[in-house]
Length: 108
Length: 123
Image (cartoon, rainbow over all chains, first blue to last red; front, top):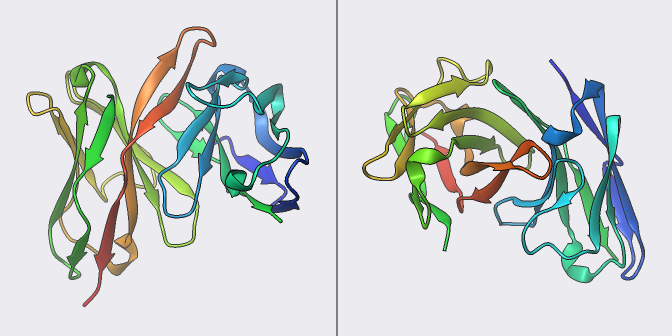
């Protein structure tokens, strides 16, 4: 079973700064199946990035994804207060789907 | 508007039966897989299983196999998650989500999510 490990666990940054969130897979995976989700307090998750780097409909271009193999990154440039949330990476598979444990992003 | 609307919060006792629902609208419901995801209090997301409403082909996470039953009624445009005998540890928020295939990246993701159903199991 492939495990996803996200780091850091918590990130505290100021508005206007850049956030870099990491997702590491326990073995090499296809970037086609790597997605990122944002979950704000009391809300359902929202798809941000699919296929490691494709931006979902309606997602601002401040959000970008990159990576391949075992290392994937979600970058949020020019942080805004509403970016405060937990961010999850996910690997889609035919019979199981792994979510990372999440990175909590706090905006100071 | 494409959306998934889930049934309301439930307060149940241990050992009781429960079936919650997820109704799709704004798209061809039978043609897209629907997944169920658990979120225990203060914890992360866990994938439980997935169903194709067109033919009810269903896959379960090994962690949830035998613990829950996923079903769908394509004529009603609704997917279901049920427990035959609830436990206190089933207390959580449950989300349904639509699987979508992105041709430009040749991959899948969950693009539409229901609002979640909170289940509380307590004696």
